[in-house]
Image (cartoon, rainbow, N blue to C red; front, side, top):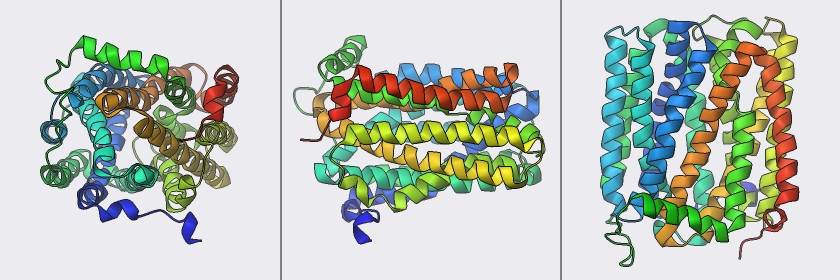
Length: 419
């Protein structure tokens, strides 16, 4: 069994270990905000369409600052960028707490703060991902990515469960305050990093539009990397129904309109499956046909999401056994998504040259975080027009169709093996 359990070799590196340990603390607080923002918006407006607007307000800064942040990471010391953006995230989280504590009732203030937070996140994440190949040998990257995702998803279980319980009791301010305080752990880990300057050929390069365009042009000669972005867009845009969770929890599963147990369990189910998949992620280091593994896991994701939508439709306003069935299917989807993401991240980190790694990670974060933002908009609209359950089923089916098209159109991705 040991070969199938999580590979912990990267934790021997003290810099990676500090970042990983800080993630354990901060990810719960971050997930409290992830839960609090849509719940607060739904409470203020009673509309899934307004909840879906978080997709638009998150997507625009993710695209702009994700691409620009990758260019920054290829031009300046990456440790300095991490320090500045981490401080920005702390300040933004504090502003979330202030608006809730002062009784803000303007949804546009909340959406504006969300956009600012996503801008800092969009610069921070590609820089952080591009640091790993500088800290670890390439054969440990799949394990390191699996460990990171396991911690992130574990927090995504505790955060929604804790948030769903606390929202009716404490309101939203305390959730935002916890997020603010826990971010200090990440700041500690970032301050402890060694200097991470770019190589001499990249130093001083102006991180402007031309640099971003050069990074995008790099993908033209690497169709496998381009395909890794495309299949994730298909999976997330069509198959991520999180904007519908407040409506599904309230209407299909009979929970209260703001928070409650069903609401918390829906948000926690996908991360729970991802954590279980991460605990038994030792096998990811054994897989050679990584492209085929990505496609297979995304098909499982689509099937599970469609099945969850059918379970919600059959619930008929009562939780009962159908809530349990739906949660199990979401957990299966989460395990499949964890494996797919680990392979795609490793492919990008290993195949890209260091001088463009920051920009490619910027594109990666735009795709990974931007896809669900587009999904929030589409599913929010679909939930209003079709109903939450039918929109979810349709999304899962479209994932399977889209992945089949990608497999036929880009056979090099299906055949991909690491060198």
